[in-house]
Image (cartoon, rainbow, N blue to C red):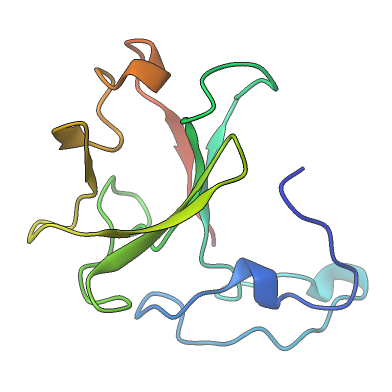
Length: 123
């Protein structure tokens, strides 16, 4: 589990043209994280073990793509890593975070082990 907070949805939101609606903190029943209240994309299927530099969640990725929204938050992305670090990283003109000279999601990145990550987008 990345985070738990039974009082606020704000930890799941960041400024983005993709999620113009701010969380309303309606957390009872099925109201928690209604559509457009969550900005984070995450990588499914990760185990507790592995490279601490593996990205686990990020914002703001354009749903259905592997690109970040270049209009969001001054051409920056927020990336959370397995070791608990959170970094604000610059976007290139194509909407990609470049790390180790490659796209963050490139299967050649050492933390992906040659396999494309199983990326999940918020609704």
